[in-house]
Length: 271
Length: 121
Image 1 (cartoon, each protein chain N blue to C red):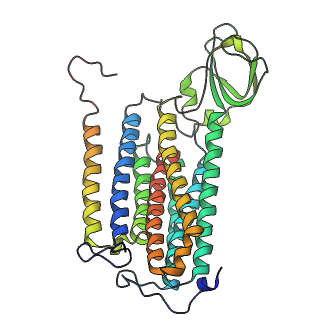
Image 2: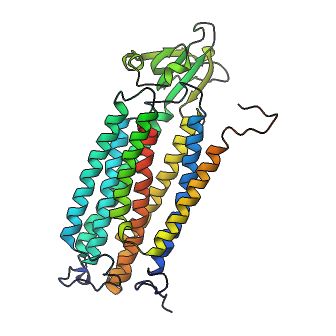
Image 3: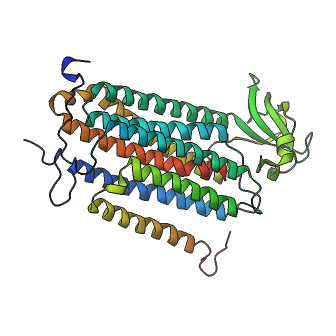
């Protein structure tokens, strides 16, 4: 049985069915990300003065990822245009580029996540470090390090601060000129040790939620694009028009993912 | 690539050629222009972020989001063909935008609306 309106436009809607389907899906996606952006706005305006982080994320990596996604949106469009003009070789090339760009994006994102995962804030007990906080990236933990038993040591590459507020805005001249070095801390001196994971504060919570959900979309989109680039491209031989429409629909999803990042980058990295 | 996948000099018949007549060179030029603007807008957002405009973040956030909106318009308008879509797609999107604004508006509106007798923080 033939599925109707996979190629030609439906008279009452004016579009083929898959296109209407993807737009309805994207509408639901807008509501999903809209809700999370609302959460971001509420968390940010509700934060105590000077307690919303600035400069915690690497703008250079965010900018590179922005350009990678923009480029991948363009290669997706060119892949579709190549199908339209019956240039299968060009389609393969541009869709292959999209996959590589997407994987590079995910690689950079993974590096950023790892950087946050090994970044620790350690509140110290009053003994040797009265009221101090150690902040930095993990260098090593001694073999016998056990926070519960208070044994061993942990070494960070970072600095000591007196107040958490000093860690909030890393763009201030003071933060930029801070001297970083290796700090070795006894487990017995640690009151609380926490990495910059999602539970660290509201910023990291919303950062991981928004970018994690976005990365899942990238992953899903890449899987679909890979399918059409590889085994799914067999359809080109039998039904090139239908295949072209599939590429358009997957491209619309990919452009939406790019659109979301267009707002995530400034909201999280630049403001 | 198999024989049947070889490029053909004949354009494929399109079911909606009237919507998006495809000219390869046109698309290459469009993509080049869009990417150029994306490069510029990204640089402008970063420059604004590190500038000393105004006190605090309000002005900078407003400007950065305005630039991001230009960027989004290009992607949605040209790459997603939203500038030349069918009425039904616009209808779907208009309703979505209304609901999204309502969603954000309600939550922002309720931010300081604490029921009597409850702590604000």
